[in-house]
Length: 318
Image (cartoon, rainbow, N blue to C red; front, side, top):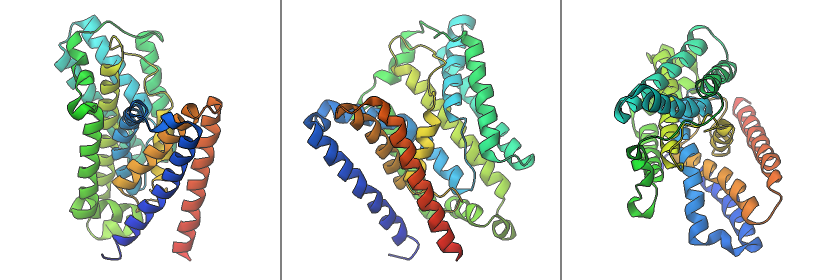
């Protein structure tokens, strides 16, 4: 095992240790933590943030991040519902248009960050507010429904007794992991995030790399929004879809070992990190803790993960 791959596996196993310790703790509080219903419920909650995180991990490896993901989820659902119900678009047409709009959002984030030079965290917070505001303007804050039953088809599919979204996320995680570790795309990503100037000197089009990452993250956010809507009762286009989900995604990606400084991370680690965050959320409820402990607990986890990343980065520079 070469020196590049070994740290990856050590890091991922390190994440699994507190994961299983926490799972064991919640189980001692309530044995229902490991029954079939609970497990499948947790898997469903993992699917949507992990799907988006497969775009975010690539973006953060390239040295940027996107905090507009939850807003894009909401807008894709609301916009699609509006086209279908009020403008008589076919379901397929509305979905394609919504996905195209998500690409435009990704290009906008890339333009503001790469061309204008705004820090990505600021640029995407701004676009996130604009996009979420658009969702509320379209709906006056109310869900749009009913929609055709055909729209709920994906939400009802359960191959292998798992949701379609969860299986899609697993497949995407495997694909992204292979791309990161065994392709020119992965090499370009790590090079861009590790040393932007050196990557440019090596002939890597870093602008193209980052733009693709922004667009991919936005596109996957829209896909997650549409899949979320397809699984809700009555398939409503609800403006609160994805509300604050970007924070769960960011926390999961960082807990999963992706560096805020770029150039480090993996798809498998990201999946474990997102699963860890959802375990905390679900476990606190199932183990009969005060549900309002969720936000303080997630905030503490995020701070610990960021602090560890900062310390690790300083050691590499020393």
